[in-house]
Length: 276
Ligand code: 2HA
Ligand code: ZN
Image (cartoon, rainbow, N blue to C red; front, side):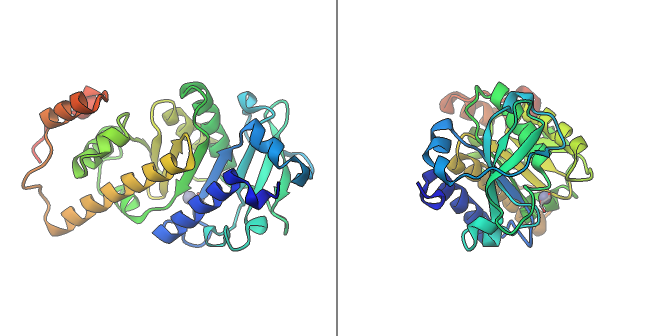
């Protein structure tokens, strides 16, 4: 099958396009990866022509032999549907999970995203932590959540509780809450380790003054998670732009009622008493 006709490739491109249309991907901002299913790899096998092995920059032994679709370093989400072969690639990992090779795409040269270590370390954590169901890691630069990293305490408790309060669906969509990585230099192993540690507990991690990482089972769920978090952040920014206080809000006991009816577990550490 032609790569661009494969459903998993179409889903990848639509996600990138949707993120672009949301305004989350200025210039080359953001990156996306998808852990390809074995039968999906087989369906495009005749399209693949493996290149040279290159170091990942991190060791991900549990992902040995896996294939990933990933956006290219320096490439624009804007161009993913316009020139797909130039904008992303399919990579294969070696038997140690230390090297990758490009099997399709990036026809004009280049490398997978600069955040490849974070993507792969997150995939490795999720393979263990979420019963192997998570396949998508998505990084974007949504303006409202970034704005909040200058205003809220950089803690999981503050971000989770404030965003839960802004939209009733939030605790149902991300009941485990949100992790927060303090400002760090992006693109390397250190931020990858910090993010993947948080991904053991959360499906969402904020990078202070930078953006957001989301993990999910498929493109719809992962994009939907990013969208829900950013929408909630937008409401909080709007509220704080109107007035510094909340006249009324969703209270801890309201969340407990919600948890019962929607059959989700909401950790008590987010349901602390406060005055706004
Ligand atoms: O430019 O978003 O974090 C891609 C990025 C780096
Ligand atoms: Zn970024």
